[in-house]
Length: 257
Ligand code: ADP
Ligand code: MG
Image (cartoon, rainbow, N blue to C red; front, side, top):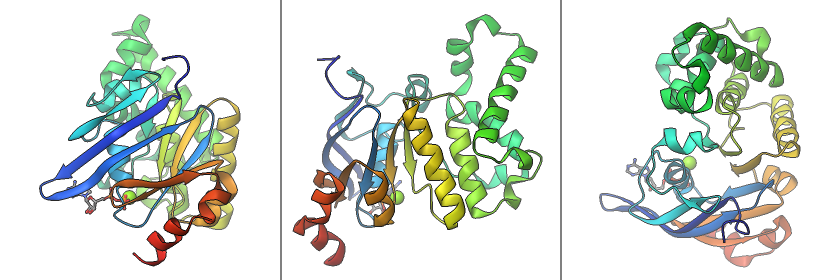
C-alpha cells in the first residue's frame, strides 16, 4: 500500500530510441533515507533510467511511483514539484552567467513557474519578494556547498569540481526529498570529492534520499548501503556492497563486457 512502499518504485521500465533498447524491463526501488548506488557498464541504461524517473523522457512502457503515486510520464516540472529531481550539467549558454545567476535560473529550468505558484502562492505576482526569497535560498545552498565566494564568478571559469558543487547546489535549491545524482564526482579532485560526499551524508541525515550513479566502485562500496547493478537495460543484481562484490554475474558484466 501507499504507506508501506518505498518512496521510489520503478516497475518493468522500458525505453526504446528507434531500434535501440536503452532500458529493457528494469524494476527496483529506493528506500527512504538511503544512499543507494546505481552502477553498471557504459551504455547500461543508467542515465536513461534517471531521465525516465524524472520526466525528461517518457517511458515506452512500465511505471514509476513516488510515494505510492503513479508519476509515469509526468513533466519534469510536476515531478520536481513533488520533490524528486536529478542533477543537470551546466549548459554551455549558462557558462556565460555567474554562479549566482545560475542558481537564480535553476527553478525556471528545473521546476518552472509552476514551482512558485504551488510553493509560494501568497507571493504570486510579487516579483520582488519572490526574487528575495529565491536569492536567500540560493545563498544558503552556495554556503552549504562552500562556493559562496564564487557567486560572482562566471560558471564557465569554475574548475570541474566547483562545477559539480554548483550542479548539486542547483538541484537542491527547491529542497527536494529524493535526488538522483548522475556521476556527480566526475572530474572532481579528492579534496572536493570528500566535501561533496560529506554534504550528501549530511543531507541524508536531515532526511534526504539519494540515488547515485558513480563509476568508482570504491566510492559506491564505501558510501552506499544498497547497490543496484544494471546491465544491458536490465537490473542484473542488487544488494549490499558485500553481496554485490561477491556476485559472479556482476564481476562478469564488468570484465566480460
Ligand atoms: P549509461 O548512462 O548507463 O552509460 P545510457 O542510459 O546513457 O547509459 O544509454 C543507454 C543506451 O541508450 C546507449 O546505447 C545509448 O547510446 C542509448 N541512448 C541513450 N539516450 C539516447 C537518445 N536520446 N537517443 C538514442 N539513444 C540513446
Ligand atoms: Mg550515463
